[in-house]
Image (tube, rainbow, N blue to C red; front, side):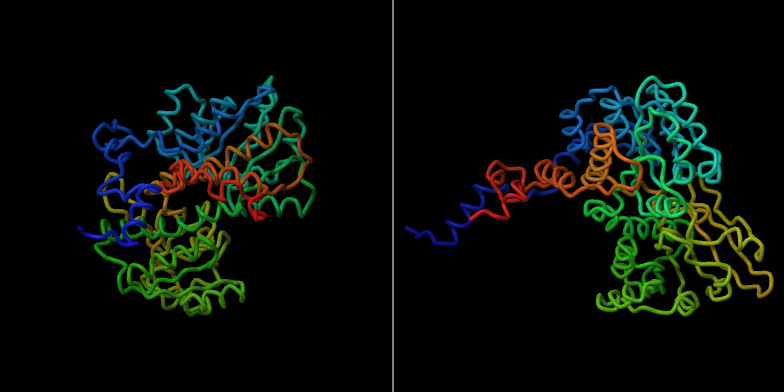
Length: 446
């Protein structure tokens, strides 16, 4: 009779405590494929993925009947978030961001009974949108909390503060936070602004956005330009969380990657991670592809002559901020060279009049990842849950005007639920006693 080894005991113990590795597709994906519904020309039903958000919603009360306004990227993946928020804080207005408003999703939301507004331009959003919100505040009988992406109300908090029903703004992005910080430097903000832009949980999302941008870029190159990324020189401008992700994604596709950041310390950090930092002029003159990841104006008119002839420029940042397209238009002839395909990415060719040098701008300089729904599944659940926790915080506590950072304890609430509901190994009963679920008290366990 064969003797059991210690290894056998360990294997039995591990099998008893933790689930075996799945073979093939996860059951949720199999279910989607077999029974998914037609959802905006997709054959997969993408609803039901926001498990953490759903649990948070089920646990949340709304004592003073606060309502909400949501300014978001209106994509198929946004619908479930809006539906869940609406269950606690009725959504009085959905505002679409101009460059990421999927027309069929807008119509779907309207068919569900939501009031949806698609502004005519980014300029309107920055300078006039506050008036639409003010008009709603003037008529409402309920308190209102606003969730936005991009800092579109940063210059108008004084006007919004005139309405006692307005409880404040939740801001999602670094770009939006910077707008509120710039406004606060000129004069005190009139309302509370709760930001999650610098939170640890937000960095989880940021670490994947760069990869999503490179994925969308690669699709455009293969389907519209008959080309691939492998072997090309790819320049990443801005080596923050998104820039790191983009650089790693380019490297993983066998590109020759250079980076530039305006912060000298960040350039040193990039060098330590195996990415060669270059002066901006050299990066622009040598790169076949340039991806702006800084969240600010990274390539100006002064840099125009440094751009390599025939280079492709695309953005990983909010709005059309990375490239000075208005300035370029003063010095270049612009031709639309988008292929005549139903869902093709817009491509514009810029030819510098003085030199004849040309380069290409993808998707009007707006974030290229929105061509392909950048966030999905468990990570989308993390982001949406964090947004909801921020909304709850403003809805349930009257805060003083100014910028407020999301606290660590609220992030821990989201993270614990996420591990239990989205991470397979933490979902089993044996894991419920793990120290991570008792953090931070478990620091001091003996």
